[in-house]
Image 1 (spheres, rainbow, N blue to C red):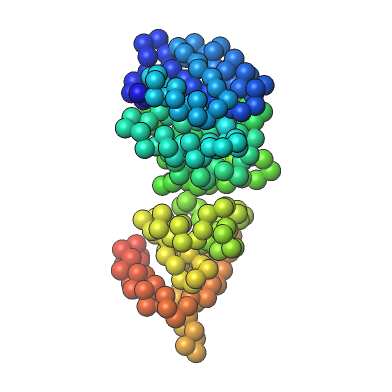
Image 2 (image 1 turned 180 degrees about the vertical axis):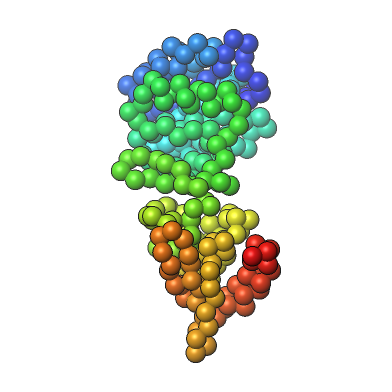
Length: 251
């Protein structure tokens, strides 16, 4: 049985990493934290599942790349528990951040771990709420650093194969997530498809242009205007959405 409130005196934690030095180091750091009551450790995902069924565990600190069942797959299994433990990913690979937060992870810590960073992860676990990045922010990676870009700052999104490039006023970021998935997730934030390879944020649309039967939109922002083509298939829907947008009727 897992989940539920923390044990009296502190959290009950399970640490999972297939590399012994990393497992020992993380376990040691957690044991130094006075907010931790119990630390259980294993290098086997199968053993981790057995321990989770036999013990009360409040949080799991786990690696991602492991033989057999990897960390993302294990977190997917834990999410189906009646009372799932909080999940903190501890990994050397920043490229899985989007997948991690889609699984409602509390935190995503990059190796080599630092005591202050682990302490912050424990604080987030005790806070009792997941990081709400799928609604308000999107994690992006650059130079080994994961940062969070507010979705409200993204003007448009461009498909690049199985990836998507997010364009803000000042820069762009490549994330490993299909455009179709972003279209579904960000519809409530005002994003609409205008082309098979483009999503635009309606608040940034300044003009809808039609010339010789071809339609385009002008995207504004501090970074200057950008004109993007609108396919015939999406022209009517876009025009209707712009007409119904209450922010435009008030202006």
